[in-house]
Length: 502
Image 1: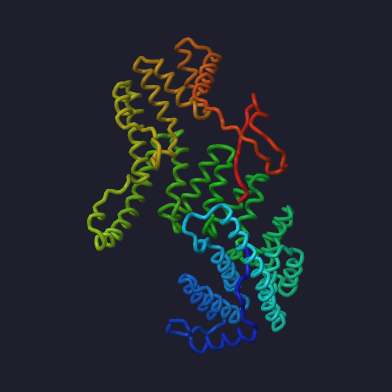
Image 2 (image 1 turned 60 degrees about the horizontal axis):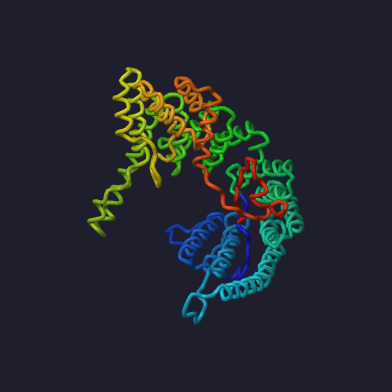
């Protein structure tokens, strides 16, 4: 994954001062551990932890000093270099935090806001130019003292990249690799540069080298590497991601979801989601926080073909959800009671999988009643539970409701009301096309002596009756800067995708 930009806005110590600072730190032993770190890597790790604590407390300058000490203890530490450079970026963002305009007794005008933004931007540019030079001097000092340390060249390359000097940065990365061909961060950076240049072959080649030398991928190069296969070779993409997730699962849920969404068949999609559940599910070694919401997609796939299987899965997820909620509730109740006993008894919203399992239980029971030709009982059950999602944060909002729509129409038709069955399916079909709903609509239409053409005409008439005129627009295309307006597309079917490159 591409690193954060590096912006320098604070003065830094010279190399000699840094060395002195390290000596002082070592003498004072700023860690709270009873056993002092012995190896360079241990000392660097201890310094980074102290720096992280300082950073969390808002002491950025102290954090920078600790990260510098970590670099001096172990110059090969990617973590220390990254956090050292990132800390300066955080100082920039702190500087850019909006502040109130002095002496403003009322809401500032647009002109005042614009003037302040311009002033802040000018100050930022001035400070960044001044202190970028100082930071480069620091890395040059480190390189002069230890010219065989590849990470000093890597660190300097990051600053040049932020200045847009990619050619100079590439030279430094090549120097790092000349010293140590196994310098994974340098290969990762070259892969990112190749991606920017649109050179996919080189991007993949350099990423594979970075991953070979750093299988855990501390540089974060795997994400963009995998995405190069997503549209060009979907099968390869899926295999690459699954192979990686089996060994190093941290943070790959999204890539697996993309693999599922780009599967060519429902069976392939289902297999990927099942793999995702195996790796990140509640009972896995690496359960993911967002897996509960992701698994709704697997439930939907089951629901389209096997209602009983979908119910079993929902109940399985509900059990895991209940165990997790009980654990959290016990912890939260202790804390809440001590602060406000009344809040401890507040009723929480209905959990996701409790709602989904209740939904599927009612659907399975209604389908059973339909099979027994107890159509009125099935309709009563469906109406009583009102399984359609409502607006807002309804737990059923992401649930596939086509099986419910089909069951309700089947019960209506079985009860002798083909017109209501036809109308209910037509209403369900309006938001989006679906082959199973269309087939059911044609079948119920035939019972009403409607031809397939007449059914299509009914659908379009219903859609047009619900259609709303789009707000006219006159915009520039992002790619060409050509002016376009809605009226240019009158009479055409157009997909409009508004977005901003921010």
